Image (tube, rainbow, N blue to C red):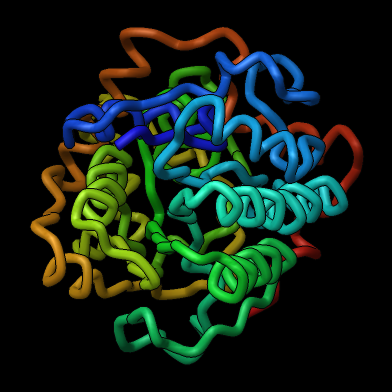
Length: 328
């Protein structure tokens, strides 16, 4: 199969080609296609919204695409709050463009969703499964629910994958792990983190997530959705201790915890469905994944990479990010 990716320059997007090729399929870069009318600043990546349905149809036909992994999105509650209009256009209207073009070209759409769509307040003591109640409480969550409804209601050949706290090295702009190690390396302290350090989270290394996506596509499973998680829950403060053990850096003063904004609370996800329907199993332990991040930060830091960018931007603009998180 020929497989393309939207959001190719993003965190998950830059990790997917390795998994596509590992499963024996051909990765086709949209960044090299010259007929897109609009591209994102500082990258060659085509805009999913500004390029309309007809442009995407032409791209799918010209490149002979079989499957598009629709991964392009403005990601994260705080980032979306800073860019409410643009993020809605990208996350919702852009998805509509992709779906209509895919239908016209008989292209399968594998959509990267999120677990913040769930009613997490009522699942504090149990695992969330694919059919758990949806009840987003942030603009980001509402955008992703809308996109999923477009996919399920309008797309002729679709699948949805929802990673739980995917993390990795260069390109990871959101995770506790990337922000923490980057901050410690750069002697930054008191970084606002919208989490309760005593709550349980379950982090998944990005390569394992990408392999999970490909295990679904490779198995030719469509018209279904899958949660993908490591299922190794850990108290957040213990994750910070692992980061300190691996890096040898003092992590205790890095974060300024904002427990009142941790609306997800204890967040555990069942990935039983994908494990039963495919051969997927995560390969990385939490410790091994954090070690990989640390190694990547030590070997190369890309100019312009800064997972604290949106926090610093909000501070410069006097923007109150906390007000966009539901209080607990």
